[in-house]
Length: 340
Image (cartoon, rainbow, N blue to C red; front, side):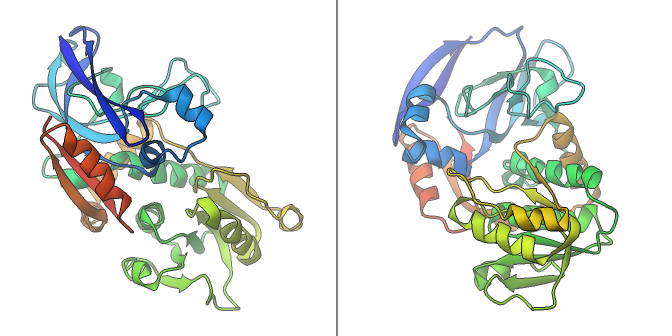
């Protein structure tokens, strides 16, 4: 079976390629809704290190997406089933290291072709069935939601049991999702959000409090915190967290920075703090995310606020159009209705 693949050849330049799919090598899925991530934009705009671009391009982008099953030789899925695709591709198992941290794992849109394809051939273990009636535009960025689920799940295992006050730094998509999930997964905790935009913070209506990072009450203290800022804002966010967090608190780092971030190790030592990083997610996190969708219908309702632009991709030039539109957004997700 001939498949069409849409690869990024160089920054802002896509090309069409063809490859062959063995119908018996996995489940054949037709992508329907895709979501652009900041990582995709770093490749598209060429802001990654030039050595990384030379090593990885050409490559099909996008690791956030859902589709419909076309054919499954294993019989685990039926034609027409709507599924979310897990972009992490483990090649081994380790009793101590999760699949998303194994150095041998591949990842769609980073070390393997992503979902910008006519069809995806994928192992049945890399698919999770979606509940009926779910908003498909929201379902498109389930991968991003699963990253926050993964972070909270790890936090549940690592942090001490005093979880009365939890802070989330950031007012973007990741902070929105993480703080929302904290409210649902840890209902006895008060969740406070810290950001730089009063307008964006107004969307966090489910939080127990929102604060501008330039106007934090002097008596506020937190048991634990999540950093969802990344980029140039990471050093300031982490410094504020270290200052406000109580001794032996846990800090979850989710924000991605291209350059090393200085950290106040003296106060980390004095307070006996725990820091842990979270990157990507695995099959178990996708399953838990879908269960949260089922058990808390209000979660997809809140997440629908993040659906910004929707672009109908009916022809090859529409791919670049969608990425260009996404470069102009200040908040939310750009969703591709994939009709190619």
